[in-house]
Image (tube, rainbow over all chains, first blue to last red; front, side):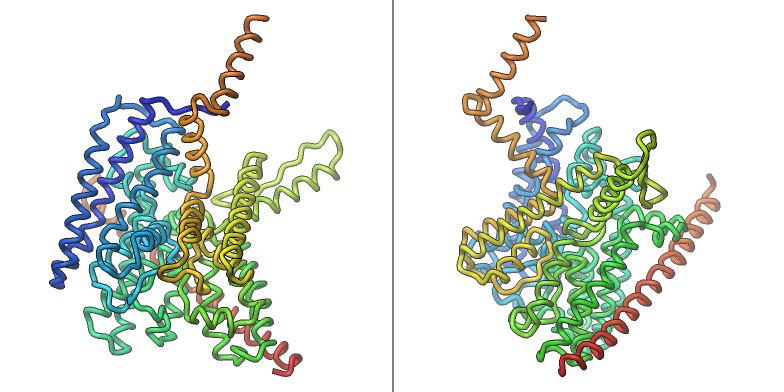
Length: 520
Length: 52
């Protein structure tokens, strides 16, 4: 039976939503400080205004007083689902006011893309965007990559509601038993990696002759983007701007570290490096990459364009890792992707994004672990078929020790796989209906729903608004791995139609249950 | 726990993490180099057969 939201539930949801909005206001300190430091007064006023909007809206929602207590799963799903929407709406304000976006919808698209770590951009004249605006774009990546709830939990702001919220944001594993400490651990690891990556990339940028300020800022932004497997870049030429094989190689390592499950990071820190190498997902990812490299290179090698070895190695390998980790950096242009790459190589980039990388990391896509569990599920079915009637069949996989493949795990993996597949297809149909080539429409739809963000040229400033809206929905759904979003939609529909179809079905079920009880 | 013990614990953790990550990063670099070699072999074999 569908559960409706009561008025008290709405108050609880509003209250926690207010907390999240207030927490996110901290993120505005970075662009505001950047604007003041570099004398970008217009940008500073925009970020002050936005901070005011965040604080007023957050405080107003916090006024919805509630009884202290544990947040129910139903309420947590609604808070998380709505938080991503509300924060995107507010985050788009300074971007829209910057004048670098065709309209508010484009600014909203950028905000959704930033928060969901998709990395597809519709900014105009990116090379002349204020430092503060760029800082905000990458702060959105940082907050979104960590998870809005994780950021809030790190500050210890949700009290007893934390555990439900944590799992509703697509994170099911706890690094340590305490959810607040888990959130703090994720935050610390992220900051350490970004700091190290920034130092190295800054040195490399100075080596290629960039001035120190730009070298530091761009290194910080690119490092955030790489570790968060996000995809925004500070220059319109993407990673090609640096013309540096050293930077590209280092970013590949950072992207791969970003798509390592945080529980494995914890194991490595505890000195249990074997856990990393024994992990089913890590092994499956290595195998998957080897197969993909062979097919991708064979496809490029057979074509006339992009087939010379140094170009293939440099462009091809980088694009494979950018797609696999769902980061979305590009060292080829959108037109090269569609015209110079062979159709097979183009399709492989889409498949890599669709599958995605490791679970429990910042990467998007379906995730390799789910495919691993499904394969194990097939093995279990075969074992059961061949085993004697009296035998009890058990199948396990390695992820921080040995774990059993249970029916609920297989069901969860199947559900998410089907939902991703359906979204990829519907998005592709939307692209085709908008007049784009089928292959391009499929590619772009996959890039949005998997939060991959590599664009083949459909996502441009001032694109058609229905498609833009749908892509935003895909990014949002993909980041929350569908279940949270679907649950939110069902809750809203069920609660909003007391006399509608759902209400009548509900009333009939209640009546039937009452009659059965009376008969007994 | 005294501050000396805490510092010693922290140093142990940092050392263990650094050595762990060194192994992982080295493995990743080796894997990437391996893929580059695989790609080169594929290019030579397929490129020759396709006459490119």
